[in-house]
Figure 1: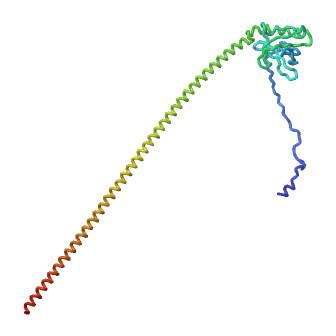
Figure 2: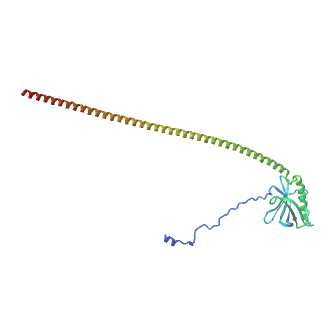
Figure 3: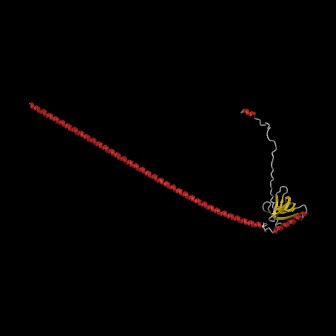
Length: 296
């Protein structure tokens, strides 16, 4: 192990390997701007200002456009910052009492201002001013802006929404509401099914409980019965023991009686034997007395 450590050199030169620069395949990526379905109605380089806190503040410099939608026919105003391409203004042109009325700003023929509900970020009422390099460019912008307004008046409602779009949105809302109703009904049905399943489950659980209780009851009854049988057996054993004891006592008594009888018989035999002996003695005595008498 020590020799391996001494042989290791972290700065050893690498002399083998593939040193060719790897080939990198670059694929073309399509970038969508949201303008693919629109054609250019007008465009011009200009600087946009926005009225904020009592003064005009620069919003962005770039190519401002009026874009005509190829299918819907609606025209919108769009301006991107030329350096960042960030959208700084995006709205339909729908002239009415409050919105999209171009007026010269500060008496200048190069600047036109208007108020509108803009959608560049979140929907918000904005006051814009657009500045051009020449009065002619500004005049052409006003002409095209007003033309766009007349085109859009036929397509927009009083709220600046596409009439067809509003109808579509209403239809979409109805569809969504219908979907929600269907979902609610499905949810109710599902809940009912779940409730029924839960009830069935509870019933099954209740039946199981009852069956278990019945089994327990039967087991208890069986245990009680067995206990009674055991008690009965014990009592019978006790009775049997008592009987056996009585029998033993009877046998003992019988033995005692037999012993007494045997003793009595032995005594009787002894008494009779003693009587016979006495008789023999008496007889011998009488015979001796007879003999004495005879001799005298």
